[in-house]
Image (cartoon, rainbow over all chains, first blue to last red; front, side, top):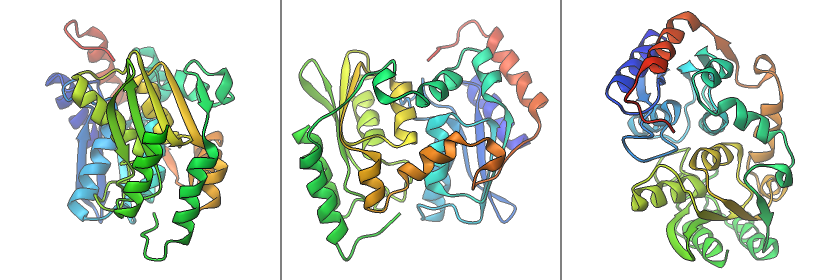
Length: 150
Length: 150
C-alpha cells in the first residue's frame, strides 16, 4: 500500500490530477502502477486504478488480472469498481474511503447515490431508443463461433 | 444512434471485442467514436463508451464533455456509467439494455448487483488498510492552491 500512496503523492505533486494512486501486484511483484492523470492528459477515465489496470494488462499481455491483487489509496469510485470487476483480480486493498474522497471535493459518493436511482430519475438523463436495431448485432455475436469472450 | 450501431458492428466483425459501439456528439457533429476493444488491445477498460469519451476529450482538448450527448448501442455498464458521470455530458441515449447484454453473456447485470452489496459481501474481497497514511495526502490536496479540480 505504501507504493500506492507514494504514487498518489507523486502524481498529485506533478499536477497529474487528484491525490490518488494504485498498484497491481502479482506473486509479490508490482506489475502495474498508476496515479490519477485526469487533468494532465485530458482523460476523465484516467483514474489511478484504471491507469494501473491498463499498465498491468499491457505488461502481462492479458485482459484479465487472475492471481493479482490491487492496492489503491482510496476506495474505488463506481467507474473503477466496474473496471476492477471486468479485470477480475483476486482481491483489493483500499486506504481512504468514498466519504473521505467526498470531504476533499470528489464526486464518488454522489455517483454511487445516482447509480441507486432509476435511469429516468438521474441528474444526467438517459433515454432508450433503437433497441431492435442494436439487438440484431447481439444476435450476430451470439452466433459467432470464433469470438474471444471476456 | 445508427453511427453507434455501425461502430458496434464494425468493431465486432474486426474482432476488436464485444458487440458494442458509441459516439459523442457536440452541436450535431460527431466528436468521438468508439467500439469495444477489450480483447484486441488487452485492455479490460476499453469499452465502447470509454473509448469514445477518451477520443472526444482528446479531440476537444478537454476533460469534460459539456454540451455533448453520448449515443451508445447498449446501456452503460457500471464502469462506463461512472466514466459518463466523470465526463459530464448533457444527455445519454442507449439502445439495448443490461438484461439484453446479460442474455448474450456479458457481466453488466451481475456487476450492478454486486455494487448493491456491502464491500465485505462481494465476490471480489475488499479490505481497508492504511487509511491514516492516505488521509495525509488528501490533507495536502485540500491545501493546494494551484490545483485543477475536476
